[in-house]
Image (tube, rainbow, N blue to C red; front, top):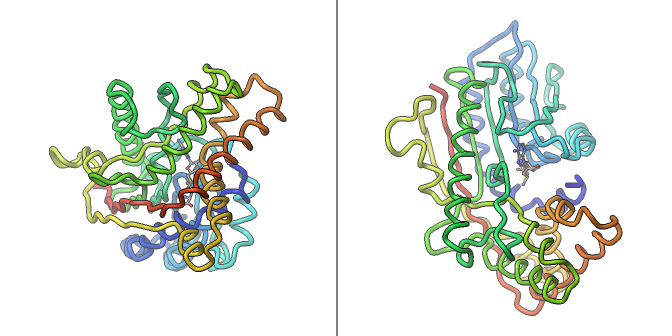
Length: 339
Ligand SMILES: C[S@@+](CC[C@H](N)C(=O)[O-])C[C@H]1O[C@@H](n2cnc3c(N)ncnc32)[C@H](O)[C@@H]1O
């Protein structure tokens, strides 16, 4: 995902992340002093990270007084826009790199479903709105995005099993990397009972994708190959590793839910500019789907891929503009401590 595109549409994530500021500060308070040593803070799924760079500033400031050096390591997939991340961290207003002279930033280009750091080296772990991305997509015919309400039960079971395994694997690797007593703070999408997080927009996008196949603009194979590995776990699915017995590696210190309305909707209520609203919604969906669409359309020249994606999101914008509805995101916040 290109950095500037992501930053244009990350306000919803930013608001959800802000709710964790107090937890992060309390977690930093509990880190013991290491005057001669380095403290490592890990940001799992950083993207281009203006949100993390600002959110972590007071946290890093506190840690900087306790250690010889504080290093913030941003973890993301190799295809992340690493240059944009580096620029964001250095130049965004209020970034943690400017809070003290003994602070550094590093990048870790690998999946957080693998071990990212040596055992027992991380003093604080943070993951903002990243764990709804599964390690693999599970294609379901005609579904660009996962919308359980319209999928067959076999596909839903496979996705749920993948989501459960991914969460287990993520926790197992963090359990290795975190020091005993270190906090792992997570914010991620959460599907509430009877509600549909961003569901209507995803349904609309799927119907646009299907109509392009019906019109012969894309092939049936392309339609069915494209699958965005995005899944909103329910509260029970998030809590599942901790539900049955005590988790062998983590104590759940605090959990919370937070509902965030897309800031684009508030702007629309003031301006009544439906074209802008539709462009905002389409822009944020596009940042989520581009990589998967490029992969599914990879047998075509790049210009054709662009034309198809433009047509898809133009259609989506048209649907939103004709039937504007509020986009709401529900987020879970977890404060876990490594035992
Ligand atoms: C919505 S962005 C969140 C960025 C930032 N933390 C924030 O709160 O604004 C999710 C990020 O998670 C990354 N991501 C998805 N799967 C990942 C994986 N397996 N390993 C590392 N990063 C991953 C994506 O590449 C994307 O940059």
